[in-house]
Length: 143
Image (cartoon, rainbow, N blue to C red):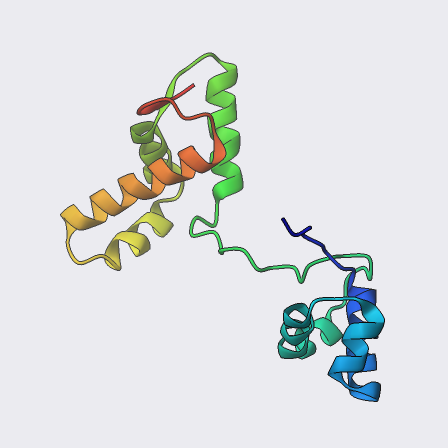
């Protein structure tokens, strides 16, 4: 089984510089990095060279999926507060919180859906997956 390696940005930049100086084959032998890895770096050359964070970082940041709920931090704090008071938090309670405190976002979100019924189902699923991703999940209630 192959060992999965990760390389720092500084090393990636050095290897890319060597690729353009001496060629890809010589740079691969010199750096002992797999060919497909170096080819991926060449493809992402602009991102690697314009990366402005720490040179010890091993990844280009910001690759994850963007959060649909812009107030997710407030929603997490609400759930933690409810759980601290020993209340069981359900998906329905999350929807009620959104209706009460984020009404403008909710109306905009529901307006993008085909019908009111599909909007309610989509909102229920959104809250359900949000809770499943962020909290302990046991059935339809989150403890």
